[in-house]
Length: 133
Image 1: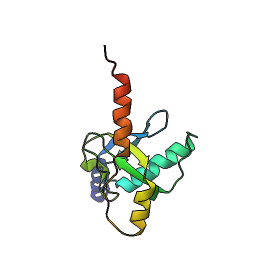
Image 2 (image 1 turned 90 degrees about the vertical axis):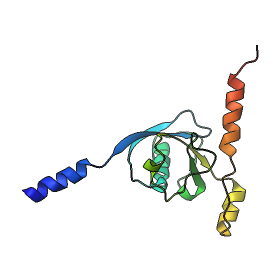
Image 3 (image 1 turned 180 degrees about the vertical axis):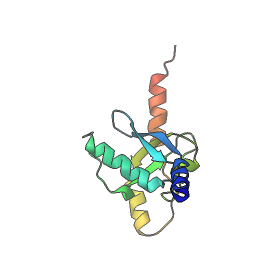
Image 4 (image 1 turned 135 degrees about the vertical axis):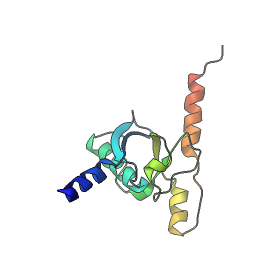
């Protein structure tokens, strides 16, 4: 009986939260619940599966190695696939495909920083909403 109560209390300590993942070029974000200690790679995989299950366009594919997850608040660097999703302390993310040049460099085992392609898209979208009077 005591062992059962301990397991129940340990399971209750798992922190879960709702995240929102926006896909570049898609209509809107996908929201789902994740565990705080879940890896970024697992979150990318879940997001891609949810995107495909909903039949969204454009069709992206399912290889999580072709995508990068960004936290727009934290900067222009992509999150490492081995980080935990709760380490950032945020709930909103942007998922985009890796540029072809970066995929080629990755296969050569050369380290490369994120290209910031989502940042230029984000700046363009902000500039189009700001009107000059």
